[in-house]
Length: 312
View 1 (cartoon, rainbow, N blue to C red):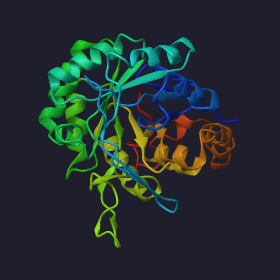
View 2 (cartoon, rainbow, N blue to C red):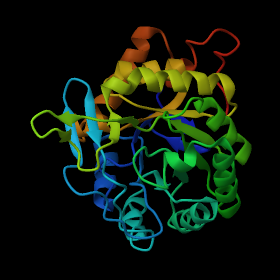
View 3 (cartoon, rainbow, N blue to C red):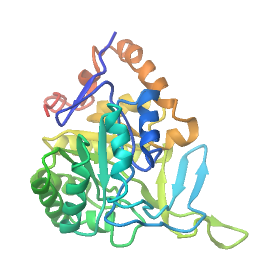
């Protein structure tokens, strides 16, 4: 049976399926629940310096055939309150990656330092939320700023740092290279695509905020393209995100170059049991495709020598 264990930036995972940030990660119990359901590890909700209410309702619009549109506004309890939730997951032995956001390099470093002290195994920097003013992709669309933020966080903490790259840019590879120069141990891609839906009867946007972020099946081709490009250009590992609902979706990301993958919108549609299903289906599917392990599939769609599996 094909092996599915993964090493990502020095972190050992029992399988490549991570709970994505922003889905199911509000509490320590929900993080525990994702791991108990079969996830290889979890990424927390994105946490900032201070409590944030987020945007008013409606904040979500779902479309079964292609995904979800959301503009939550990064609601969170703040970095002084959230560590008690992380503690629940860490105490239960859940491989936990802490997601943080801020408006500049110094603020990122301060929040990251506090999150790192909770016992998380790594940090994911949210440089890619498409609808929060002064945060997310507004910070993460400038390679120079990405490099500054990553370097400041790397200097502030001792755990590996993963930079989450926005697709809402002309050149995501430039952002990935900037993160690598700043000392990132890995990059993850992609976050949601900036998007809009309009109610014909009300003649106004469906979401209260107007613009939102699109996730789910519709963005998988974009995610695959970005992962492909990042794998070709970077020496550090890439984590794939976007539209992963089936085991074949995940293997496509591996072939494009993803060392691990994050699953988010599928949890909203299929429930937390999606992780157990994916974990059970992965080994026999790899066997059927002729891969002795998940690692053997990573980058295998690239022309030689780019198909070689990179080390952490």
